Length: 159
Image (cartoon, rainbow, N blue to C red; front, side, top):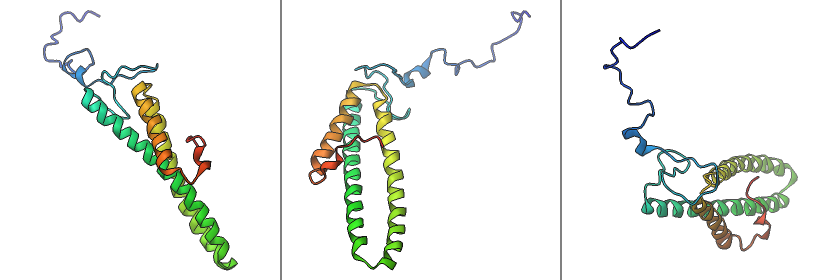
């Protein structure tokens, strides 16, 4: 069928991804390791690296996020140990109730930890060297600051 005689003047083709003004907001999704930060988006389109300043602030945010994750993991481990010691000191009929509450709280904390660790994994999956270094440095900083009393916390963060 020949469409050459049809008038296409009133049709808007501006949002079809063929270039134009919308390209400035495109995210660069790498599937191989790179140090390039041109149009790097971290986790979602709104976290778009547009220059050196946004890169530095983003890397600092990632370091803090990963360091706080280490604090969270280590704190949970210490609270679990404290709860076990506390449950052993109360009468048996109260232990069941304490254990049920404790298990419910541990489940919620486990859910938060699982969500957090997968966000860290998604950060790593940017395949960007700067982000990898920020994740690694943040985890190391968190362990250095908060892991003094818990040597068992050196296990891998992926559950």
